Length: 382
Ligand code: NAD
Ligand code: USQ
Image (cartoon, rainbow, N blue to C red; front, top):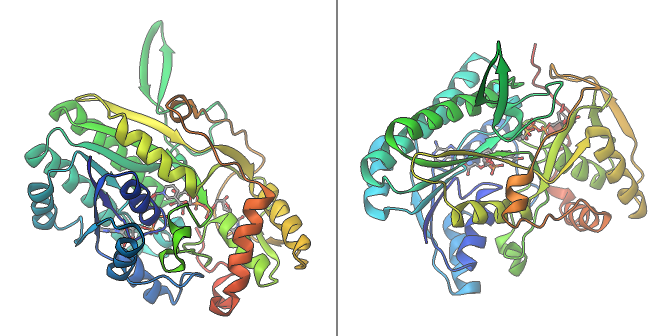
């Protein structure tokens, strides 16, 4: 299958591109490398030393014998997007290429607007290019579980059966996101749903939970293929941050009382979910929503797991109670459905002590790359 992986230089996109290539798909990475520029803006870095994109792809060719094409292009540039669609005519377009940090979108007005411009405009360009140049292309779009927020009822997969004043309908599940970033995903979902309806586009919106982990079978094949691993307070996600904090002997930054609960999944399951979505395309005009996570944890549960494994490795860290820079719910109900991907064959990698040990060891081997100044949060919601 001809597959474009947009955002293929990023944390989820790079291992996905390798996985799909290994499976024999004809993969093209599209990325404008903005994530590397944001590292410069924030003075941050990946704990793991990642190569330049062209070099990584050359190593993959050396290791696997397989080619991955690279297009350095910005999805907000319609000339570039339309040229890519006309040249490649992809069967699946996997869209990871967005600014994905909630704190980044909350820095100030300019960042909130740039976040919206980049994400919403990029996705609109992809929709128009599919319509104009590759109408049969299946859009596999990364949304987020955070689109739903934390409602006091079960979270369904995209839709809710509603009975109101004696009438019934199946309506889009209500969205109550918790940051301007998460809001961009809601706007994307609405735009994609509308495009499916009016133009007959096929789309799968993957509402992904928080991704943890580092390596996949493909990145493990050579140290030069290593994935990026963010630990700073802006782009690092909770579990990955706790792992690096444990590796450097820093107390774990549990925000508030740590009862905030989310869906989580291993990066090894992210790559498989994308394969499942590509191999089982949505129908013409269908807007399909899958919830992409495997387990639910509170932040405190995650921190306690990391604390235990770090202690076994000789690093004794405490759970620090850190004032929460965000505005979010505590002690809330959280029960989300995630059966669609499991029904299509996903076999989850669960969060085990062995997994945590592997990743903490990698972090411990790279502690010289960790800037402690980046660990504590500086961006607040208020
Ligand atoms: P990332 O920042 O590591 O990677 C995103 C990549 O997209 C980067 O390489 C960046 O340079 C590129 N990009 C951004 N805007 C672009 C544009 N306009 N044109 C071309 N390239 C562009 O992020 P990630 O963690 O790999 O996340 C990928 C996607 O998955 C995002 O859409 C994110 O919202 C979603 N997601 C991520 C997580 C997570 O925990 N990491 C969870 C749920 C959903
Ligand atoms: N948290 C802490 N301590 C930290 C960092 C975070 O307690 O040091 C808490 C936050 O307050 C929040 C929870 O952990 O309650 C999750 O925060 P996060 O930074 O791990 O994840 P989030 O901001 O939700 O964003 C991440 C990705 C984003 C993706 C989202 C999936 O960065 O791209 O969309 O996970 S979800 O959360 O399901 O919406």
